[in-house]
Length: 420
Image 1 (cartoon, one colour):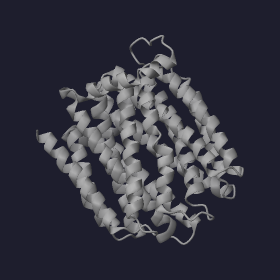
Image 2 (cartoon, helix red, strand yellow):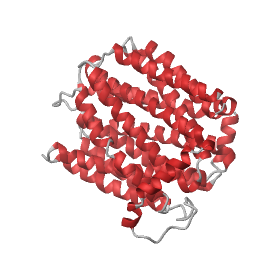
Image 3 (cartoon, one colour):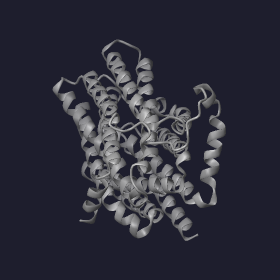
C-alpha cells in the first residue's frame, strides 16, 4: 500500500522517530491520568454525578488553558522546544504523584482539582511544543503524512493508556491513586525519551533573546497581536477559516462527550463499574476511528485538498450523527463513536497541515497556542450547553439535532470559502 510505503519513508527520519516516541509516551500518560480522573470524579459509587457537575469539572480543568495557552506560545518561540518537552514531562510526573497522594488523603475536592489543573496546564506547553516542532523533523512533501501519523498515533497512545488504566484499576481493587502513579511513570519515560534529541533540533530558528522571563511575559500581548496579524494575512486566510471550523467541530465533540458520559453512567448501564467499562469501550472504538483517519486522510487530502476534506468530514458527521445518536442505544452509539473519531481526527489533521504550511516557524508556537485556547474554550462552552440541555439520564433529542445542524453549517461554510 502507498500509505505503508510512505510511513516507512517517514520513519527513516531519526528526528521524527524520536519526537514520535516522546508524543506516544506523553499522551499515553495523559490517557492513564484522564481515566483516573474520570473514574474518581464521575464513576465513583459514592458520587451522584450530574451533567452540571461534569461541566463544572471541565471548566475548572480547561478554562485556565485560556490563560496558560498564550504564554505557552510566546515562550515556545523563545525557549528550546526540546527543553520544554524534557522539563514539562518531569514536572508532570511530580504533579501526578501529588494527585495520587490527594486521592488517598481526606483532602478537600478543590485541592484535588488544583493538582489536576497544574498537570493539564503543563500539558499545554508540551502538546503545543510537539505540534510546533513537527515541521522541524520532516520535509515539506511529507508534512501531511506526518500530521496524519503523529497526532493520531498520540491519540491512539492516549486510548491505549486509558485501557492500561482500566486494567490497573481492576488489578488493584479500584485504586485510582495507583492508576495515577502509572501515569507518573510514563511521564518520566517521556522525559527520558526527549534526551535522545539535540537541544537545537526542534528550534525555534531565531536566536533566543537574553531577556529575563518577566520581560518575556510582559511582551505577551504584543507578540500575540503579531501572531494574529500573521494569521490574518490574505495568504493565510485558509488557516484562519480552518481554525474556526475545527473549533466548532470541537464544540460538537465536547457536547457529545458529556452526553456519552451521562448515558454510560445512568441510561445504558446499571452500575458505575459497568458504565466505566462501556465508556472505555466507546473510547476504544473512537480510537479505531482516529486510526482510520490517519490511513484515509493523506489520500483524501491529496485528492480533494485539506480544506475540502474538512468539508467532507463535517458533512459526514452532520448526516450520520443524528441517525446513530437518536436511538440512544449501545450499538448505534458505538458506531457513532467510530464515525466521529474518524471525521474529527480527519478534520484536525487537515487543519494542522493548513496551519503549519501557512505559518512561519517563528510564529508556530503562538499560533498553536491560540489553536489550543480555542479548542478548550469551545469544549468548555459545549459542556455548559450540554449541562443545560441534558436530562439526568443523558437522553436529549434537541442536543443531538443541534449538533447535527452545527456540523452542517461548518460543511456549508467551508465549501463556500473553497469556491471563493
